Image 1 (cartoon, rainbow, N blue to C red):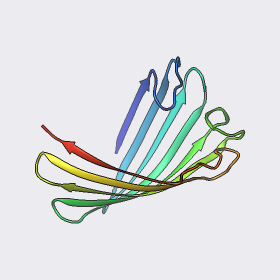
Image 2 (tube, rainbow, N blue to C red):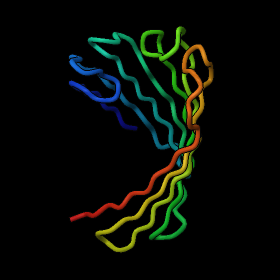
Image 3 (cartoon, one colour):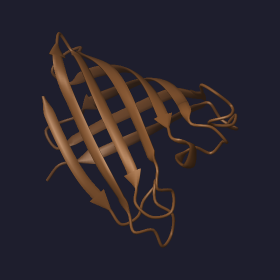
Length: 140
């Protein structure tokens, strides 16, 4: 099990000129590749409200070089932290990611995710529901 707490003087949850946000995380490995996590953020200045999400992941090591991860996440936002007029369940997300170790120093990864709102009064319909990305990591 892991725990974390921190702060920020800017970032995604803080607008420009914001004093910052407090952040807390906890997570646990349940065994057989299954893990859960809870993250929470409270803005101290502009929003002065809470956003939190809960996620479940399943990781599968295919071999020593290649692994897959399936994930599901649900977010909750208080009224001031949501884009809409209400508080409540904000968004849900399903994702799949893959990682391949090219050698000891170089890793290639890719992620594909589907995200949508639970309630249009909390988070209005977004232009895009499907997104992805690729990454290249060099370890020195």
